[in-house]
Image (cartoon, rainbow, N blue to C red):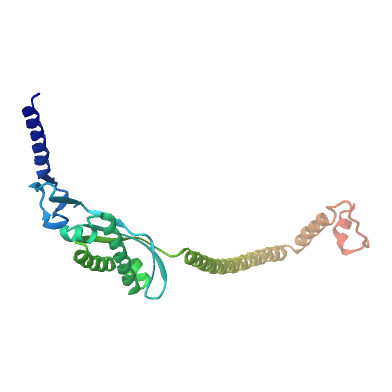
Length: 289
């Protein structure tokens, strides 16, 4: 290969390298700034193909997609000075590429650290204005909206980023408070259980007393009806006896004596010691030949 051909080849390679370094591409998911000797000369470069001066200009690209900041669990005090453990996160993205680069050197880690401190401060301020009930249920949406708005104003001004949303993932009581709350709730549940058992026993006693009263009433009513029936039977029997006696007094006396004989001599082991001339034997004496 001649010297001229070698020089031409080297020149072609150099031109190719220079040409390659003259162009850069910004994708749809990126934001970029163009630097000249470390100073921003073009902010917020739009997506597409662009030209730069090699070794004079540098391009810094940033991810323009939605980012998530998971803040560490923090302990805050509510309005009534009750401690709560809060786990929150924030969604953000780069809005002003130049300001973002100036504030963070284009590093997401630095942006997360500064945003995390601001988020902690905002949560502490908002929780300190509300009661435990309000932050747990009553005003959580309002609390999130206030924190998002205040954090977005700060982040946009200082970091060039937009805070889309702030959410609280969990609100818990500290472990030592959890134990005391559990003990208090357990004691309360035991007290309620004792009250329910006492009321149940009282109700059961009332039911048993009412059942006993009804049983006594029913037994008394049955006894009264039985006595009335027995009395009616005795009256009817007496009427029958009286009628029989009035029709034939001798036969009635004879029949009653036979009944007395049967009842007296039904048991062979019984012994009667009577005077033979006793009135009891008058019908037996008459039966002798």
